[in-house]
Length: 186
Image 1 (tube, one colour):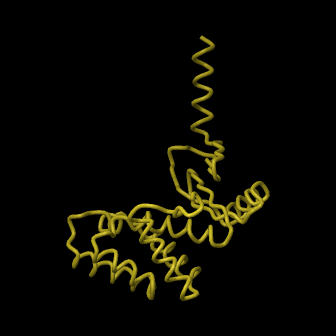
Image 2 (cartoon, rainbow, N blue to C red):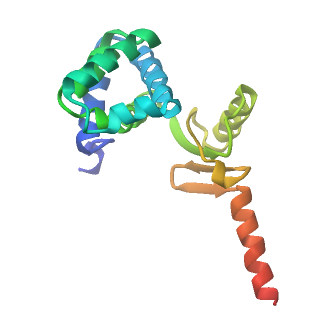
Image 3 (spheres, one colour):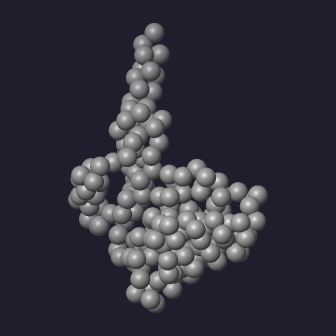
C-alpha cells in the first residue's frame, strides 16, 4: 500500500529512520534535531570539516578522532554524537547531510509540519525567516519547517519549493526572462 512506503529511502533514509525511532523512544526528537542542525551548519560553513566528512581518503580512525574533537567542541553529545560516530565507524559519514535531511523530513511528518526548500542569495535574518514561515503557514495551513540553502548565483530574491509547488522570484530568473524578451524583440 502507498501509505506504508517509507518517507525517506535509501541508506541515508534507513539511518535517519533508526535515529528518529531512537529519539522518539527517548523523548528527544527536538533535542536531536537541534544537535543535527548544529552539525549540518558546521559542515556547511567549514570546508575542512566538509572534506573530512565526505572524503574516503581518511581512515575510520582519523574520521572518528577528528569527529570526536569537533563534536566535543560544538557541544554535541548523547544520541547524536553516538549516531555520527557509528556512521563514521560504518564508513557512512559521507551521507551525514542526507541523513540529517531525512531526519528533518521524519520530524516534520511526525509533527504535522510541511517542509519548504528555500534558496536565497545570502543568509536570512531572523525577522525574514519568521515572515517567510508566517506567509507559508497562511498558504499551506500547516506549520512550515524551512530548509534554507544559500546560493549566491541567484543574485537576489528567493526560490521557494513547498510540496509540489515552486515559486522562483530570483533576480537571475527575472534577468533571464528579460534577456529572452530582448532577443525576441530584435
